Amino acid sequence: MNQKDIARFWAKVDRRGPAECWPWLSGHQNFGYGCFRLGLSSVPAHRVAYEIINGKIPVGLEIDHLCRNTNCVNPSHLEAVTHRENILRGNSPMARAAKVTCCPKGHPYDDDNTIIKKLKNGRYGRECRICKNESNSLRYYRRKDERTK
Image (tube, rainbow, N blue to C red):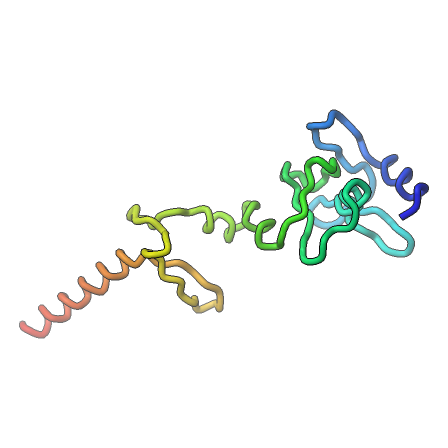
């Protein structure tokens, strides 16, 4: 990217205080991400802002908005992270589920008490080992009682 492109880019940004979000004033893509025309292609504006200040985005990483504002191009609000980290920082169902640290009965989801199981939809979910053992025990004794009647 040359100096003319960089000047053209910053002309489309509302540069406020260093801690504030810097809104992108030009065109937008889906979900509120700004887009900047570079040659024949359109590039996400937040990626351009990151690369102007920090250089190329490392292979295997993507840019996360620390401010959660997809229209922001303030380089201090942008961080290169893995896709997994970016997803888990968000508010998607997967991110919300990952933030849960205990089962509905209050048992901890830790290495000793968590069973990872494949769900019917092909994804993976967590199950509490203590609750699973209690459930299996109840089912065993119910069946045993039914056999003795």
